[in-house]
Every structure is written in structure tokens, then in C-alpha cells.
Image 1 (cartoon, rainbow, N blue to C red):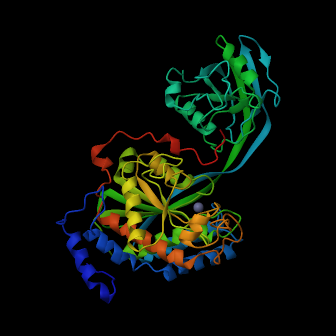
Image 2 (image 1 turned 60 degrees about the vertical axis):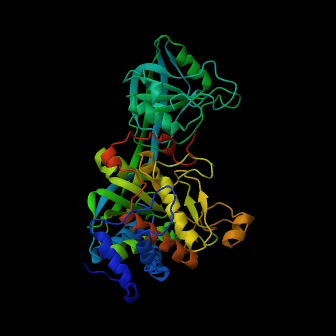
Image 3 (image 1 turned 45 degrees about the vertical axis):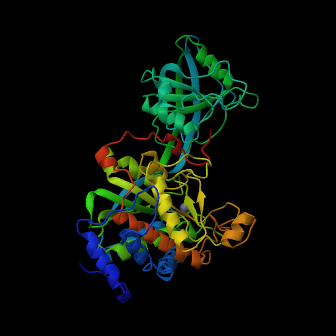
Length: 518
Ligand SMILES: [Zn+2]
């Protein structure tokens, strides 16, 4: 085997030889990461090959691409396509075979005429648009006449907001007759989750109604974001909801005259040629920027570090197969990664042992925030699927061993790991901070300015090549190299879902994007 290692790394090369053979070493117990193991030593040695200066060269290229393409690299633009071509070309030259997968995103939603809601039985009446109901933005077009079925509503409405959990669980639709229109009360979970469950139950349309407390009785205008439900969706007042729920056997005509124009972009995928195809370590970063700027920290930084890791690992025979991914349309709602995971068969998903995500790693006023896979911070979202804690501990070890500060960050589902953890795939990663404000404690720990954003240019035109902390870029890129190389040899503590076919953790809580209307 040929290894492109520096002279001083001859001993590491020997280790590579040793561990590429049927493994004779004993991996450490997973719960406590104690003494350095062979993969740990190897991964640390590999990390030194990842240099911030080389990662920065990829960022310079992304900046040039943005400058030449109207100042951004957003999904569906020439700047994105040029970014993808650059990464792909580098991968090809390093010996990777690459593939792309299609990603759709909503370009524009248009309503051509006001939506219609009429009760046809037991009483004929026409509800007023917009006094009684409004079209939900992003709704598909459709003209359906069908019986209404109430889904788990609290009638009369409860005194406190967000008491109704109508439609939040698939079980709420247990007795739902396919083809009917689901009548669903607002409350607790995002509307998108309720409509997703309605679609799974075979609904032909959805009428939401406001939950019923003071201030929550009018038809609420909101964007459900998802454009692929394929049925009409409206939002009605509490009064209309109660009227339709009263029955018996209420039948309505529901018509929405609207359409979403769909844009197209691509994910870029590169599999290493080493390792077993049934055991994959996946590493990803979103490649698209927002339209407002070049996206050099968000997420040129993660994209460039993953690229540099892939390039340096190209000739290293790893035990497990590596899959590198650059996602499209993350900024439009994690669409590239979601559609990728959705598009895999269950068997293909089960081959992915874990997923590492890197979205913003060089924030100019940032910190080293590690996704809280074990929920040790007890904040927000729960722990990730089994194995996520191991990933967090492994990253902690990289920083801890070097005396570098780090802390946890809630596993919110705000980046591309969301679709993976929702499908039971353990995940982890590094984040250097976005629009959040640095606390005094964090400034003492990481340096930088308290009271200012981690990235003052987050999603702005000034997220250019000057918006990078070179030290953080170097450090975090090395951590990415370390974690990738480590798991490429050692998956101790990461469940083998492929063989075990464990019952899937229905981590649906992670599916709704942050800030989804509810
Ligand atoms: Zn991002």
C-alpha cells in the first residue's frame, strides 16, 4: 500500500499496515475512553496532516467563485454549481469516484385565485376567505370534496395554549379513513408534523383550526414550508373548526388554486474505495450559501475541511468505508440531506454506522461547540440515537487532550444531521457558533468578545474570506480529520444496526426545522 506520509510519520505508517490487516488489537471499552488505542494514535497522527493553510486554499477558491457569480453560492445558482465542480474535480484528481443525487427545492409559491371552503353536508354553507379561513402558504393545489374527520381534538378548547396535541402522533390517525379530509386543531407540535402524519394516514386534504384560547381563535396565516404534501391545506378559525367538527358526517369541498415552482440542485457524494461496503462512516457538510453572501464561514469552512480530510485520506486504506457528502439546499431547509436520506432504502440507511456533520467551524468570534449527543447538558432536544454519545466523547477527547476549551451545543436538528438522527443513525459534529451571542464565561474560555455574535456576518454579505478565524479553522479541521480517521478504524460503541436490525427510534421530534410554525 502506498501512503503519502511525511518522513517523521514512518511509525504511523507501520501502524496503518498493522491495522489494515485483520484486527488483532483490542479496542477500549466504549463507556470510558481511557488509554490511547491504536486507532487513537493513528487518528492523532493523521490529524497533523490536515493544515489550516490548505483548508484556507479551498476557501479562497469558494470566495473567487462567489465573486465571479454575483456574490453568492446559493442552491440553484451558478455559484453553487461551480463550487460543486471544484470539489468534484479535487476528489477525482485524488482518485475518488463521485456521484450526485438530485435535490428539489421550492423556488416560488403562487396562488392564482382565493381558496374555497364549503360545507356540503349536513348543511350547505360557504365560509368566508379570509375572515373564516386562509390558504396555508406552500399548500399544494387541489379541489377535493370529502367527509371531514376530526383528529384527536380537545372540544371545547382547553384553557391553556399548546394543550392540544392533535395530529402530533401517528397514533392520532389510528382510526382515520383514507381519502377523508383531516380536521386538525392547532397546538404543541409544528403544523408540518401534523400534516406529515395526515399524509401518512392517507388524508386528501387538511383543515387546521386555531386552538381556541383568547388570541388564538382567528385563521392564522403561516407558511408550512413543505410543498410536497400533494393535497390542499387551509387554516380556519376556531369557530369554523368547531362547526365542522359538530357533524354528523360533515362533508366539505376544499379547493386551493396554487402551485410551487420547483428548483433543482445536487448533492455530491464520494465513497472511499476501502473498507466493507456494508459499514459506512459518513461525513458531511452543506456546500450551499445563502443568497445574501459568499458563505465562507457558513459553510465554506465545513465543506473545505471535509474536502481536505477526504483528499488526505484518499490513499489510506481504512477498515470501514468512508462516505463524504456535500449537501445542497441546506439553507432552504436541510433539503439536500433530507432528500438523500429519504431516497435510501432502509437497508442502505442501516449500512451508515454514523454521520459526522460540520456546519460552520471557523466563526470569527466563536467557540468549539460539540453536538450534545448524550444530552449531558440536559438542554432542549433529547440525546441522539445510540452511538451519538460515543461520537461526542471522541471529539471531546481531541480537544481535551490538547488542553483546548470546548462545550456542548444542543442537538437541535438545525443542520444536516437532522435526517440522520431522525432515522436512528448516530451523529455528532463541531459547530463554532452562528448568530448566538457569546457569554462572558465563553469569552473567558474561548477568547473573543462577550456580548457579540459568534459570527457577526452570519447569513450576511460580509461572510467572505475575511470572516474566518484561521486558528479555529486549523484546529477544528484537524479535529474533523481526527474523528473521521478514528471512526474509519474503530466503531466500538456504535451500534451495528445493519446486522441487528434494531427497532428504529422514531425520533420524529427532530424532523421539524427550527422555528417551524406551530
Ligand atoms: Zn450552515
